[in-house]
Image 1 (spheres, one colour):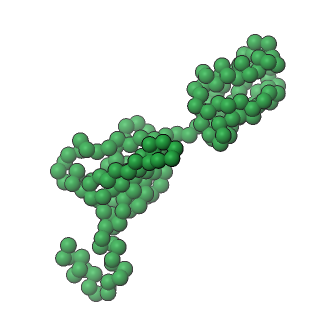
Image 2: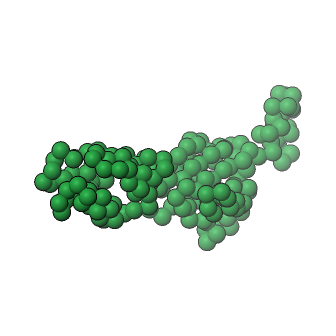
Image 3: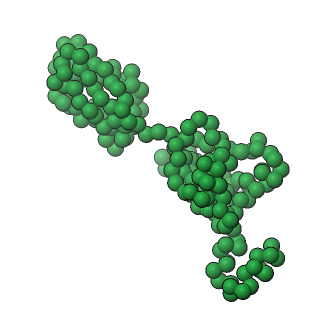
Amino acid sequence: MAAGDAFDVAFELSPEFNQHVTVQPDGYISLRGIEDVRVADQTVPQLTATLRTAYSKILSDPIISVVLVDFQRPYFIANGQVKNPGKYDLRGDITLTEGIAIAGGFLDSAKHSQVLLFRRADNDMAQASVINVKKMLNHKNLHEDFHLRPGDMLFVPKNTVSKITPWLPARNVSAYAASF
């Protein structure tokens, strides 16, 4: 269980204790008839055992079932110069280039050669990797294509031309861009 996960607790022989519960940000849940219980990082079978132990103080051999209703799905974030920046469900094995495609692909202003992948090392630190997607695709070498993990963020920066275009006179933009 994680913060924001929601589940139903059903008591077969004591339906007055049936309830819908949401895990609080601190990892605890508030329950009818007993003290708050810490459930962070527990699986459904572990949670069921925890609740059975907690309720055995006021019920004799409680029969409890837990049904997960809503949970934090694994996700990745695509940001920067992609067509549809946002948070996406991470369903199955998705690579960095597939993640970019899911986000609508690169914009014309994207710097394909310096895509950043931020990955949490722990709660306080993240690891950043620079990936040259342009080179990887041009050489048809997808062996270097990172597999995304839950919570990863990919960031596609602006290319140089798109950064300076607003400062160039309108009539010279096409001539300047053609020199690249």
